[in-house]
Image 1 (cartoon, one colour):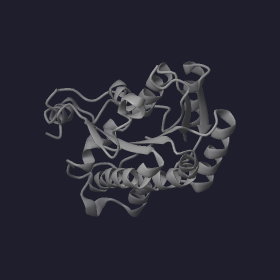
Image 2: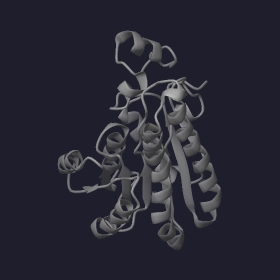
Image 3: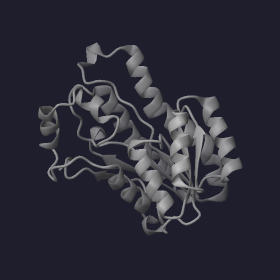
Length: 248
């Protein structure tokens, strides 16, 4: 029960790594808001996961939607102690000149703008009470980028830099900011990363991971619980590689 009675928001928490984090947080005593654009799936997961799980339909790239998340979270569980910026998308693998402006803007809005909006909305209260934890789900793509995913890679590099900068700026307010760098995992994004899901492409991906397997939502949940718990109260500004050795 590392997070007993902690109030948490997990964006993109209805599936993939986000859902793995939600489950681990609930198992460790937290009250968790699943903030997801897929209302049906978020509602289903919250109902399955019990009385400490709640769902709020949220478009993380929209300022009004974030303000609604702030308002509804306060009414539902109170002001959050922990923010997990997990929501993310990618574009299909392709040469940079073939990526459309629309694809680029979608990736930028979900992966970058959302963190800006969440921070602006929730940091003032954390500063007021001089307590809080922010966990950003970045990626190994931010430090060891794969070809043909340039703009996705760039957003995760931005996430890592933003994490370190926020950690320095918010430390005087006792607010810790860290990131996790997962390697590709069995999530809805895996097929988009690969472009095509075939045994050959999977084998090629796995050959770059020394431990020989994809990351799992449970892996991310375990790392997230640690970084958001009191056991990590001297850790801020790190981007923890949960990647089976991919970045060595």
